[in-house]
Image 1 (cartoon, rainbow, N blue to C red):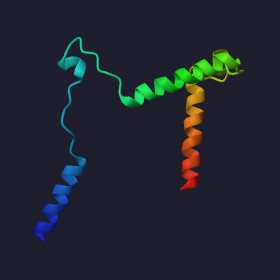
Image 2: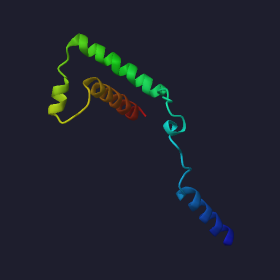
Image 3: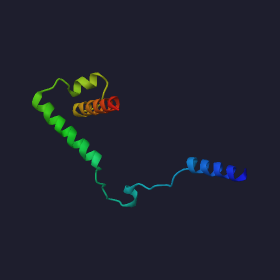
Length: 95
């Protein structure tokens, strides 16, 4: 009985206790600029490709159109989010 109570107490402590304090890299190494992650580089490459494709085609989506809709997003980012959302929705439906 006591061992069970200790186990539950230990489990609650491990789940609810705050994690270790982390100091941001900018404070540890002044002047250090962290490299972008692979996800950031991939997203930047994809939005760049979308921007070039939209520039060639002259798409109807423009910053002013999105601003009228109350969005403060670049058009290429908006298209990228729609594409990613469509892919995730299709993958979710497939599973």
